[in-house]
Image (cartoon, rainbow, N blue to C red; front, side, top):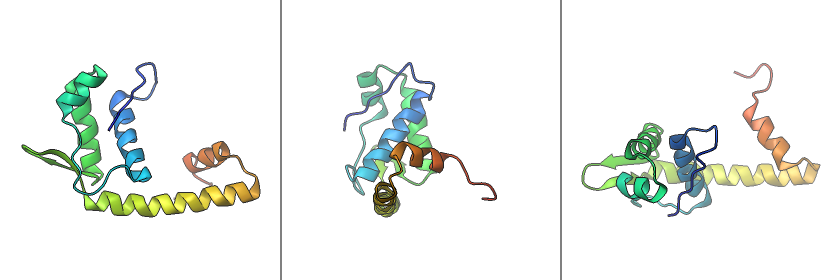
Length: 120
């Protein structure tokens, strides 16, 4: 798996890394039981601090997407692949509806990021 980061981005490096794992889950590129590269390997490849990678992995663990196993590293959980598969289907339905209505996906993304008034 190839990870990329943008050091000039305002988004913290650990969040960029975690987002790429989430996107890989959404795309079906990662499966239950699959092991991610070690924090050391990713840190060396991206030329970042190993603790930054560990922070991303811990964030994903806290979301229930990864298990961190001593000696085995970071492993994708069954929960993550199940949830993200359902989300992928829902997103495809949103894309289809947006195209039908002529709404640009960039506008849909802004709608998702901004809660509607009265929503909890």
